[in-house]
Length: 314
Image: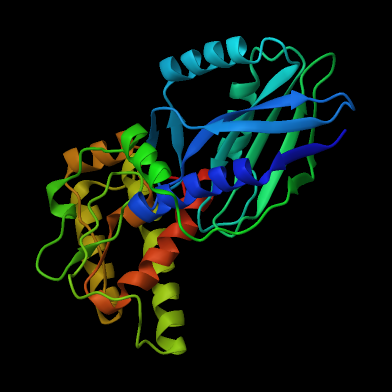
């Protein structure tokens, strides 16, 4: 059995991914149908997106819209032997299956008569394609996706950008007021708790930092994240009261000050909100020098994916 996708459909998936990243720095997902041909091979066709909530590491398709999609495709392809394919993007990260992805494959495979397909892509046009057999026994295998006459197109078509803007909304959560930053403090979270990243108007894509400065900052930033996990866990377990939490954060911030990093000191209510939102540690890290903004942004990209794989949990 071979799996194919033609140039037009492949480019459409990639352009959806580019549009979501270019406009919101987010993932995006959608559905396709896979039609069996006379040779027993499967052809991916008609990639679409539905209304969804998108984030830096997630894309949740609206269940009602998904049900309408299933019904519409069942009518359109009633004369064909077809299955569904759930696809989504990993934008700047690698194309691989996260723990969340594997759960989604099972979710979107529910109700499948015998098999379903899944595809993950990134902006480099790397991919993973999986065939999941559900009956009579469960078996999942990654396979090669044959892209027929694929060519690169750098410009995202306007109709793709318009459709993504119309159907995708970024995830928003309540944010403790003292996390918003002030003056030149920059809050770097733009993923799980909503887009409250504050960028200086003159921030460019270039950096004058040396390799040594970058390496030191990365080390200290990851150190700050580990400390956030440790400190909040101590409070959640009842080993620390809030006074101990605040004094420890203040002491750690003095150590981090030379590296332009600061841990937010939460109130009890804000900590409860953070726990309820299943917050990630970098959401409580402020960077006080715009020169380090892009470097921290890259770190967040990496850690936000790791969070989905059990890398950073509280």
